[in-house]
Image 1: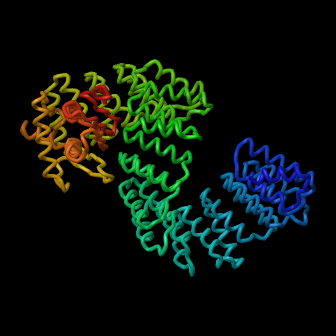
Image 2 (image 1 turned 120 degrees about the horizontal axis):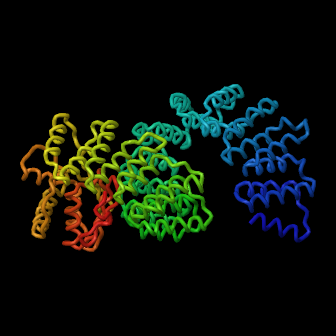
Length: 629
C-alpha cells in the first residue's frame, strides 16, 4: 500500500523528503525474497538521487533494511561511511543490531553491540531491548551478564521493558536462578515478565513449576497460555496440553496460530482426530491465520490419526508450501500404506523446485517398503549421496533393512548392516529380527536377537519375537528354554496401553484394567464379541503369552489386551458407520491383529490402529500391513 502510494506520488511529480523513505524502507525490511531485495535497491537509488543519504533517520533505515535481509556487509559499510562526528550515534548502531536480529543472525547482532561500545556510542533502552534477546537466542550468557552490568551502571534497570528483556535473556540461556532473582525483585511486573519465567521453566522441562507460576498469574494473554500449552507438548504430556487449551477457552482468551500448532501437535500424538477437527473449525471461526506452520501441523495430525484423505485436502488448500509441507504429506502417505502415491508426491516435490532433506528420504524409503519396491528403494538410497549430498543416517539404514526384510532378502539385509558407517542400534537389529520372524529364518533371527540383547539385555520385545520365530519353526524346546530364561531373569513386558477418543475425550485402556467408569459394560461387550469371533472360527494365539499359567488362563490374558478393550468400548459408544481409531504404545500382538481383522469383517467396521511400529488399517477382514509388522 505504502509503495503504491509512493509510486503515485512520483507520478504526480511530487518530490520525496526525509520523512518519506524511513516507513518505505521499514516495509521492505519486513519482507524477504528477490522482489523485496529489488525494491530495497531501488529505494536506495532514490535516496541517493534525492540527496537524503546523510539524513540520520533515512540512513539508519537503510542500515536496518540491509541487515534485515542478511546483507550485513552492506549494512556495516553504510554505517562506517557515516561522517566521523556521527560515528557515535546510537540510532545507526541500533538499526544494525536490530537488523541482524530480524534476519536471525544473532551472533552478528551481539558482535555489533560490542563494536558499538568500542566506538564510544552510548546505548539507549532500545539498544538493550534489542541485544538482550539476541544474547538469549545464541545462548551468550557472558555477554548478557556484561550488558546487565552496563544497564545497572546506566541506571536503566527501572525501565520495565529493559528489565523484562533481562529476565527473558537469563531464562532463554537456562539461567533460571538469575532470572528468578530478577523477577522476584521486580517492583512492577506485567504479563511479559511472568511469561518469560514460565517459558524458562518450560525449556528446562520443569513443567509443574511453570504451571504453579502460571496459576498465580493475575492476568494471562495468548502468549502465556501458548507457553504453557507448548510446555506440556514438549514434555510429552499431550492430554494435559489439551486440558489447558480448554481452560483457555473458558477464560475467553483467543488463540493464535502458534497456540494452534501446539494444540494440533498434541492431537496428532494422541490420535485425537475429533479434537483436531474441532481445532480446525475453531481456527476458521476466529479467522486465525492458516500459515504454513499450521498447515504442516494439520497434515501431520491427520496423517497420525490415520486420515490421509483429510491430510491431502489440507495440502491441496495450502497456497504456500515449503519442504516440510511436502515431507509431511510424503511421510503421511507412506506410513498409511500408500507407497506408490508417496513416491509420486516426491516427484511432484522435485518439479516444484523444493529440495528434499533427510526426513523426506525417510518418507520415500518407507514408501518403497510399503509398496515392496526394492530396486526403487535401493536407487533412492544411493541417490541421497550421489544426487543430493545427504549422508544416510541410522534411520535411513533402518528403512533399507525394513525394505529388504519385507522382501525376504534377509542375507542382503544382514550384509547391509555390516557395511553401516555407524554402530547398528536396537532399532536396526529389532527390524531385522521382526523380518526373520515373518519369514521364519531362525539362523539370522538368533544372530539379530543376540546383538539386540547385547545392547539391551532386558528387551522384552526381542524375547517375544525370538519366541515367535522358534514357534513358527516348530522349535518348541527352544520356546520353553527361552521362556524359562525370561522367568529366571524376571524380564517384564512393558504394559500395553491403548488410547481412543470418543466425543472429544481421550479414554485410556491398560491390559486387564477395570478402572474405566464403563468397565462392566465393556467387559460384557467384549465377551459377546469373543463369542462371535469363536463362532466365526477364531482361535486364540497364545505364542506371545509368557506367564506360567494354564492354557485357559493364557487365553484370558489375551482377551483383556488393551486394544481389545478399546475396540469393545468403541463398539458400545460409537455409531455403527464410524471408523474406530486406536493408538497403541507397543507393537500389536499376533492375537489382537488376528482378532481385529475378523472384527472388521463381522461388524463391518473400519479399525485403524497406530502401534509403535506402523499403521494397521483393518477393512473387510484384511489389514493394510499385509501381515508384516
